[in-house]
Length: 91
Picture 1: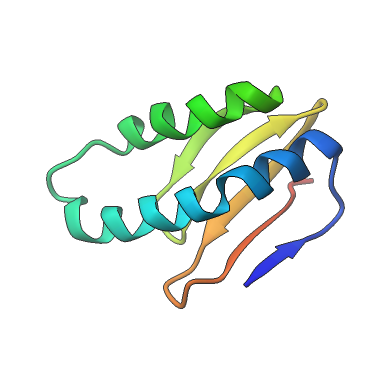
Picture 2: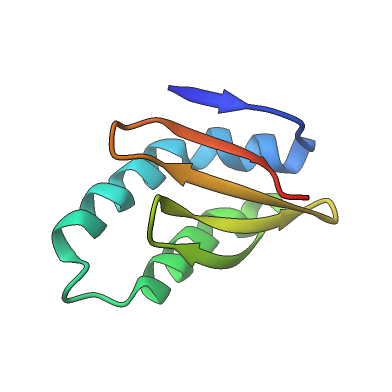
């Protein structure tokens, strides 16, 4: 499920372009968290963010996701264990 609230155009474009990839990364993290550095996931996701003027600020382990900035605003992007992918503005 994709849920968008309160967003900028850059954030919306980034979300639409990367939702499937974030789901893939979340599944991979479940399997590989003992062996891989979450910062590598940040670098991987940033390659998509670069196309939309988005900066990945930090990764979040639970629920899996990240915080990012777009258009001067900060957002949280998550994928829950049941597969819900959403993002919202962080105050």
